[in-house]
Length: 114
Image 1 (cartoon, rainbow, N blue to C red):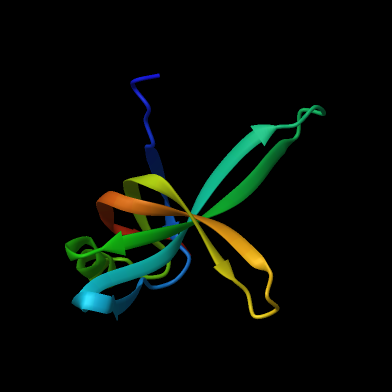
Image 2: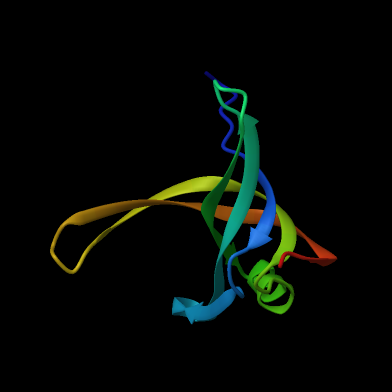
């Protein structure tokens, strides 16, 4: 299994403004959730609309772009990779999360969802 690929491409709308933080070593980090809509017909032939939410992480210069251009409702497209993380919750339990680390971002300047 030589050609292993971890690649995600999503196009959707920002659920909030991108939030920028500076973390250890003065690295910039921005986070935002993207809403991706889909529709399909169920067994009865009725159209079903569904929204999936994904957590995105931007680093460095891409974090600056996210902070400046990604506002709530902005349509944008990303290309990135899945990254699994875990942390200990306040109650002592171990929690697991999957983020998408963004490698490329394209912001649709004039499209904003209502």
